[in-house]
Length: 77
Length: 221
Image 1: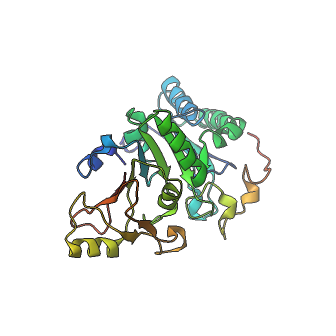
Image 2: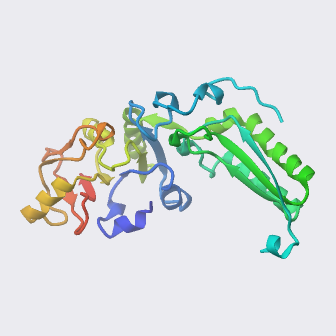
Image 3: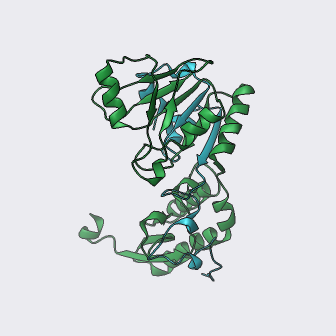
């Protein structure tokens, strides 16, 4: 996601805050470009698809206890 | 091509590392995710014909292969592949706590409050980055922005095909104000519709993009 296409729709420079629906791919256009002075990543209380709280998801084929940080798996190389 | 010509014999090692993380925490613009990429590039520069893949893993697939994986390819040198693979896998494991803490995620109410403070401090533009849903209909952030009266905010975007159709039928043009509930409802993650209403502090405004099924940009002032 990039601020430039939005400029065709509205005068984005007139706003203090922009709320966007992207938490990963916005980095190039809003962060690495130097566009934003403040960046706040947010998510709702509920663990919907895309949540950072993976233990709130109904996994059927993954045992989260076998992975850090949800369990304490042994690992050595 | 080199393998077909016979001067490259692909010899690889694959090491799974039991670390799982959501994509939003896998941003390579900060350490130590950035350092993992750098470490792989240094190995490739030091050892010609060595190629490194570090898979951060997609945790929402619900398949047994989730988690992080290192894959190293060398030209017929299994010992080198093993050495490089172990080095990178060990780095991931050593840095696992920092990897999971490299990006801060706020609950929506906290994020909106912080945005309000940042705007008051002049640290603009402020970007509130949300990905509550996959339908683009979610209103969690919109409703909190209205509840906390965060002003001069552009919301881009909230999808609502019915609202867009109604606006078009009403002949609403870019910049016109309107009273309407938008977004939400398509599934649980979209939440309830959010309301744009004429308010004392100024009207809500909408921009409907032609040919699209989304109310592309709704703005408040």
